[in-house]
Image 1 (cartoon, rainbow, N blue to C red):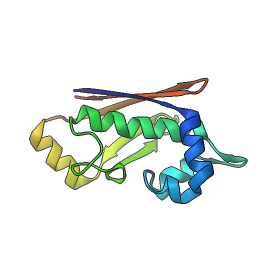
Image 2 (cartoon, rainbow, N blue to C red):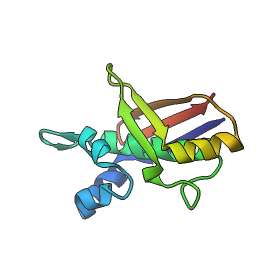
Image 3 (tube, rainbow, N blue to C red):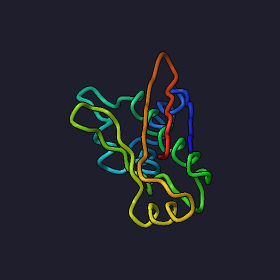
Length: 123
């Protein structure tokens, strides 16, 4: 199963400028917000990439963001080389694995100019 999402980085930058950390907290955990924070402010490209990653996972699962799956049911971390990894909380993982069995969630995020794209494959 595959999911992909694309988002304009400037769209997420506008959200942050308008709503600040409170706006980020609607779709990112505190740890994820920390990963998106740099000495000189936020990394809007990373914020947009994280948004796209969560949307892509919801599409791969076939449900979208809504009653079955919320943004905060998914967590993005970085491995030792800085590559992103996405996981579902344990209850959601059990639920979705019972619907569509899979053992691994693969994630790729890229950005260029004003675009962030994420692709998720369930294997």
